[in-house]
Image (tube, rainbow, N blue to C red; front, side, top):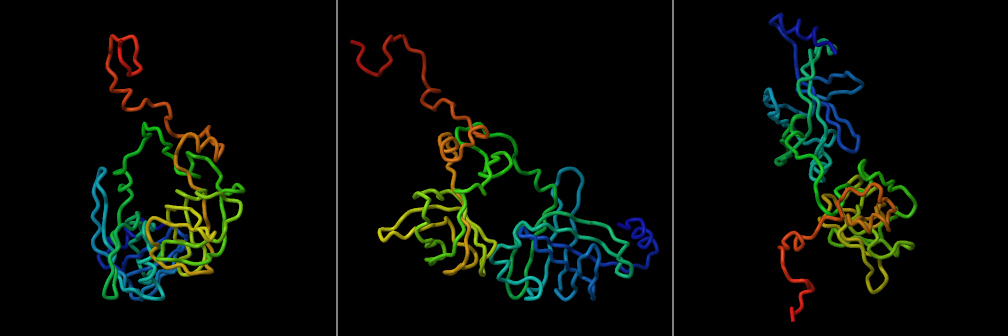
Length: 294
């Protein structure tokens, strides 16, 4: 990517360098920014200058310490909208930062690669914390010795295909109450509670791309099917918006066997003794039924 050319340029003592960032959201949308006074283009992406984006010095270290920095910029309808930040669309977005010779963009070097952490906004500007790749090493990994399954329905360890007929439903909303209660019609073919502990994803409208865990799936006395999520979405869906409902899993052994037929991939330990059994102490009594010894 022209690292040698960049080093030669820096060695001259008279430089024409700037920073450039590529931000890739989880929905696949890519943005390019630069702190130069004109747009740059490389790797098939245009890095825009009018956003006013800038960054603090990058804190880098050896070992497993977390590299971090902060990006700051103006909220602009043509680049980063306040509504998108409020909706969480930039949460966890991938960030790649380069040091670039703006007079020859082939002379550049990647200086940072990581993800967006906390985002603060206000007074027409935003501050985004950037966390390096070593941040992931701070998270515990490994199997957990417990009765319930530790997999997420549909992930690699679960292996279940949610697109199998009968486990996903897409339809327009009949109505929305209090931003977290969705009226979905009768949902013919799905018994009550089928989507409880599942996931709701909005496919159209202002909240498109946002999703949430389902808290309840039940019928009202008038026959209306109600899907309630745990927390309100950060953007407001309306009647007519298309949503996707995914079947829920309560992580139990019997649910995996009977509802999904996926017992071979169950990631829990259903035969762990209960706590009462662990606390049992030796006794000389022949009868251990809890009754009188007489």
